[in-house]
Each structure stands twice: as C-alpha cells, then as structure tokens.
Image 1 (cartoon, rainbow, N blue to C red):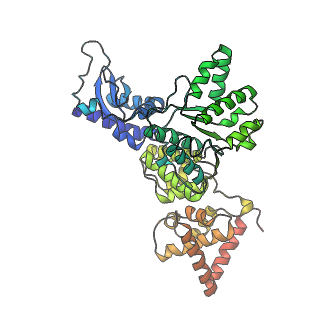
Image 2 (image 1 turned 120 degrees about the horizontal axis):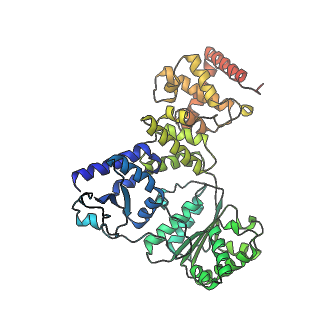
Image 3 (image 1 turned 180 degrees about the vertical axis):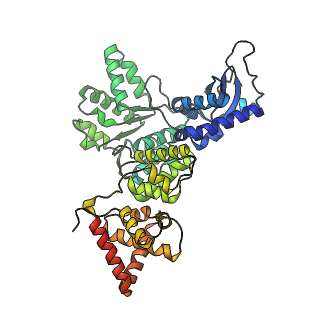
Length: 468
C-alpha cells in the first residue's frame, strides 16, 4: 500500500475510535485497504460474514470517517475475501491512481464462507461477535451453552430439538448465532436456516395468499439446520402451528437439527397446541437465567476487550453491581462509557463511570442506606478523599476507613459481599469478609474505636429516611 493511502486508512480508523467508538471492534485492525480510486475506498474484510456485518451496521460511520479524513466526497466499498476490486470510473483527471496491490491484498487466502443462507427465507443477520468464544459462561447459562456446543458436534443427534428459553437480553440469540457460525465452520455446505418466528409467520401468510405453499415448504423442510428465534410468537396461530407441526416432523424424521428459542418454556407458551408442546420437549429444554455478579463483571470485560476498550476492574465491578436485569443493559452502559471517554478525551476510570452512569445505588431507603452515603459519612469523619478509599492505596490512614465502609455496608444494607466489594473499589468478596472480621475484632478490643463506629452508625440511621 502506498504511504499516502496508509496514512488515509490510519486516519479513518483513528476517526472511528474518536467519534464512533461504539461500532469499533478489535478485528478492524485486520481490515485491508486494497485501493482508492474513482471516489471509492476499497476495504477487504477477512470473511464474507465480516463484510456483510460492516455493510449492514458500519457503513455510515466508515463513510463519515473517510470523508472527514480525505476532505472529499468518497465512499467505502466493503469486499469479501473473493470479491474483485475495481474502482468506480470518474471523469478524466479526477481519478486517484490505484496503488499497486500485492497478490495477497487483491485476494487473501480463501476461507470457508460463513454466510448463513437459505434463499427467500429472510434469514436473521449473524454477527461475527457472536461466537462461542465470546459467550461468557456462568451458573445461569452453563447447561444451554453446553447443549449448544453439543448440537454443533452432532447435529440432529445430541439434542433434537434444542429449546432454549429465558428472559429478554440474556444471550439466547447469541447462542443461536454461535451455532450457525460453528456449524458453518465445520460444514461449509450445510443449508442453515436462521429465522425469526415473526418472519416465518409472514412468509407462511404470503405463501397462502399467493398460492406458493410448495415453494414455502421446500425452503424450510430442505434445511439441514433450522433455527427459529422467539418461537413463542406461534401462540394462538392455529394455521401456522399446523404448518410448523408438519415442518417439525419432516425435519426431525430426516435427522435434521432443530433449535428454538423462547421467552417461556414450552408448557407456558399460551395457546400452544399440546402436540407442539410435546415435540418441543422431545430433546433438551434449557433455561437461561439472569447472570450473577461475577458473570456480569466478566461479560463487561469480555465485551470491552472485543471493542478494544481498557475497562479497569473497579469500573466493571461498579457497573455490574448497579445493573442486574439483562446483558443489553451492560452493553448500553459500556457504549455510554466509551462515548463519554471519547468526547472528553480521557481514559475510562471509576470517576468517569460515576459521572456517565448517574443514578441511585441499587438499594432503596426502605432497605437501608446506600453504600455511597456510607462512604460519604466515613470519609467526612476521617477527612480522606473518596477516590483514595475507592483506589488502591494501602496506607493505614486509608485502609481503616475503607474497611469501615465495607463493615458498615455489610451491617446496614442488603447488598451481597460481591456488590459491596464492587462499589468500594472493585474488591472481591474475600476482601469484604476480611474487612468485616477486622473491624469486628477492633471494635471489641478498642472502646474508643467502638464509640466511633457507634457514632457513625447513628449518623447513617439519622440520614436514612424510613429508618428507626
């Protein structure tokens, strides 16, 4: 690549990191600028899957970066490993010469296509982020994860059907996409159909209306692997349930793999025919639950790594302690942190996290004081900075107030050990246990210190509405 083009591409990536941090991924460094001509930048991705993802989710941001850096009305053209590069033609004198490209740049080594396809079935998009390696396994999802991997190792044999259910935003669709990508890697020619239940319903109604039921049935019943997201939308759809019943039977009898996801287990889907409930239970029904604290921390760290973000442990713990509902909350918080850090041109740290993610600590007045209010009470008494208490300093003038914060939070809130440690500098639960024991011992041995603790507890109670 010529030096001017190398500088342009470096500028594009830098602009993306500064102004579009939420779309950035580590694998962007593997993208290759193969030419610049006719007002077009040709960018080759490492696979068709990555190309399709870039075209679908990143094109506007890349075009903005390219136009800002070149100060020209240029456009990005994303290419797959085998797509030819030919710059668009422009009037004479306006072309920028295309740099000489190495054979490797023109056509990287062939890799099996990762496109999940089935003509005319409105397949759901598959993200290169959603591989098994990026799925964080915890007690809440271990069975579903293991079953999904088992399906890839023995499609149609291990668990057929595999029925994964759980609340919104807990990773069900991630597992379905991971199955698609893993099977495509193992068997490039497999006919994989990955579709939403809503799209299945729409195509069925269109086929009925237009007299194309034979074509509709062929599209689905010839699949090697059928994955349907949100199968609970079959609820109360009598004609569609009848059609899906026969599709299910045809695939199952042929030894083809079926994977379904739902917000509810089969027996709790309203108005679902008993024969479908029975068939959905033939294989394995696996529930995905809300992730625990440790899993949420790992999810944040894993997703930050994928985006190329440096996320300190105390920030990950702080966010994980506050947000408990689902993974999309965590992703949203990470996006907020990334954007705030980019706007303010500073690193992500605990102060930025507290500024960018305002709101009450995850407790209510009725259940006790907040951890933040306890920290304020203790730091005011000892005249130390909150940042020092939340930081890594181990001097006695800091470590004693820090341990006292942990002790009081344990005694006067309903937070778990993990949550207390998370909000007091990202410590683990063993550190909180040690702090509680140390303060209990010191309180029993030192009457002056016991009076200090009693006084602080009185202040905490007085400052907390609804407390006696």
